[in-house]
Length: 305
Image (cartoon, rainbow, N blue to C red):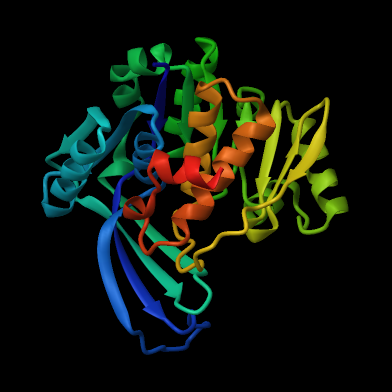
């Protein structure tokens, strides 16, 4: 089985549910809260494993109860943790997540903790894993210079690279040329092109700008409106699934999408099929509360498809 390598962070998610997300200076009375595993890279790793992919996760966690939750989850999900470093110097990170219980929309603040202290030297230790993978997937929650360094290693060794640019942050110009698949949502895409990305015209303009930076394939996720794809040969929309179950929590849906994309590509699916598969993974994850725990198993995905 071809393998997927993911660099990213693990944090403990502290999730608060209320009828609305508070505005600036506003206090809101919530109904419930849960504590669970999170972090984009961690969520993606669990989602890959549940979707049937072979996964090796590169990260750093603390030697504390939150870190123990992570290791236990990875064992249960069949995530290879040989490159998950347990730090004696830093605590495991946390994320505060506010969820609108009516719509499932969310707002997130992340404190990376130990995962934010991962270094280039740590990447060197894991470089053989990156080189032997068929796909390298990462995001921008780990230190940017470390992420860019890892992408360069993957690209040099002809490993397909997927960058999920969240949270959006400035990248070196040369990094864009090393990316095979760039997967922002509309908010993240607007950061990189300096204009709104909502209408079809704006989507086409944005993808042209990004392709001109040297990225090979652009995939902009648009929530319930679907996904817009473009490269230098073609562009098209892929509709979101009309789910039977109500959307209750979109936290982690983007992570699920990226994981699904990686799994589909390793299975040799063409890009339209891969995006459809990724949409199924992302959509199903939003019908359950939580992040890693909400990631669908392969049987659920295949049933939707």
